[in-house]
Image (cartoon, rainbow, N blue to C red; front, side, top):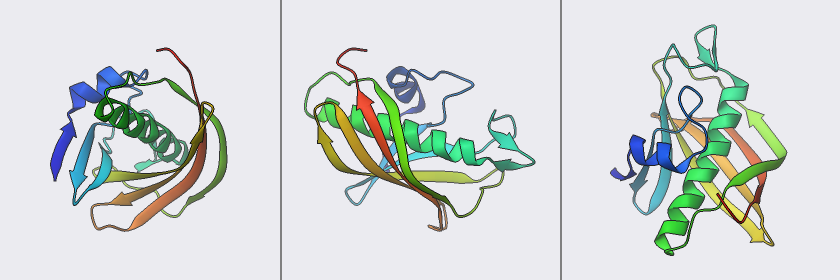
Length: 143
C-alpha cells in the first residue's frame, strides 16, 4: 500500500485533534483509497476492550473528511470543512478489539450545492466488513 497522507498530514487536515482524531493515514492500493486507524487501549471511544459504535461512526465521518481533502488537493482546490448533516443508514456488524487496525473506504454517491452523500465501509486487516453507513455531510465554504 502506498501512503498518500501521513499521520501529521491528516492531523493538519482534520479539525479534530488528539485525543479525538480517529484517522491516522490515507493509503492507496490498486487505485482504491483507505483511511486507517490502529485501535489503542487509550482511545477515548474504546469501551470494555472494543472500539465502540460511536467510535466507528466517528471514524467513518472523519474518513469522509480526509477523502474529500485528498480529492480537493488532487484538483488543486482548498479543502472544505464538512459537518454531519444526517446518518441515513448504519449497520454495525462487529466491534473491533484493541490492537486491531481498521480501514475505511468511502464511496461518494452524490454531491451538489454543498451537500455530499457518501457510503462508508469499515474493514479489518482480514477484509471482514465491520460496519457501514450512508452519511450526508454539509460542506462549508471556508475552513
